[in-house]
Image: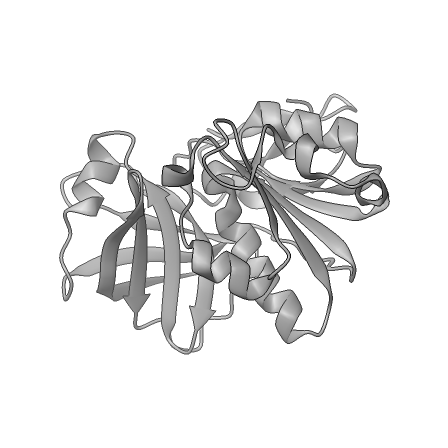
Length: 242
């Protein structure tokens, strides 16, 4: 874990209220898919945790959605400005099986895009199954299709791909593959009911981002508490209670 001053290369809107942030200066920082960074936004006390989309050379890429004053302020940061970044944080998708499924909803696709790039580099096959509300909510569509030309995408209103939920784009054999999932809690619950085995990446509000404040703890089936930021954010199915 290091604290770095990184320079903004790009901070552009790529879908409805969703921004792609690219920062340079992260030389010799090794990140794993599923790990995240914690960014300090000028004039805000708490940092914001963002999932890593890519780490190429000394450039790190993130996706974030404007949902409040903090992320709104982040969206107004300009190219050339610097941000204080704490990274890499948490445990990611450390086990990566070939012929697996990458199943994401909304902004939950961010760590899965990073996972897809890493698996492609490792020569492991995967199948993308993503779900969104509308076509306007889909970020980096060209990147998705370049990673998996046969990617299946569902939208609730049918404006792109198949109309319906993620379950409407699954094939029968999909449920028997290892699934790597990220998205809202109701989506993750549905994933655990749908697939026989897999992993979930949890999204939550965080204070410190590295296990000191205990602000992101959750209950495990054995009655113990685990920290999403330090023990996760990636957990195997059945390791956590929602």
